[in-house]
Image (cartoon, rainbow, N blue to C red; front, side):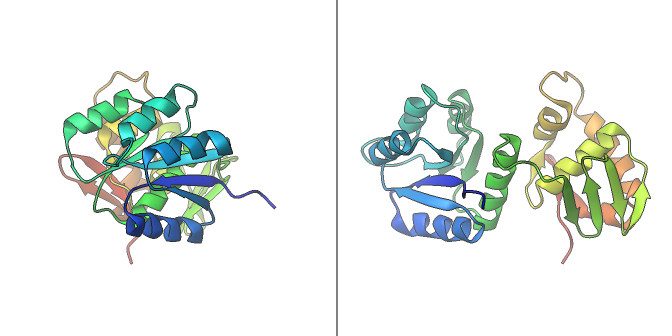
Length: 227
């Protein structure tokens, strides 16, 4: 049996830790907890096999930024920051320090779990599944093939990558910049409108399932299978 991936949840509110722990445990992760930054840093270096950190910004003894600085000197472990304030300066500081995701409280625990899974897949720790399925769409990565209700559809390379990225990040609002960075990679210096063109083509190719790709005005897109 594969060992469970370890996630360290760091927050001075025990109720918040319990909420996150319960959802992650249900999703098959081993969860460790720390009530402040000092305990978190000690635990991280003591364990040495933690796959991801979920860090609250505002904590006694050592705040989330300081924990991030300490750990980033030695490790590239993925870090998700939780904050009560949605402050752009905080967010920019977080990305400067090498934070992978930034989530404002209050948040949906299901979305947090989805982000944990997406980050662990990206960092190669989960081993990306060769086959993905969502609402009748099946992606076979090895064969580079997509089917809708059992019928194969012809997709360009980028359309296939885009659909795969959407399905891997179901329920998560994705900005155009984020899609560009992950599907077209950081070396793409183009216009974000290229995404809109690809989404339009993708929607028409997957027919009625095109409704799963929701437009978030002024931001980007979200893939969500209707109830």
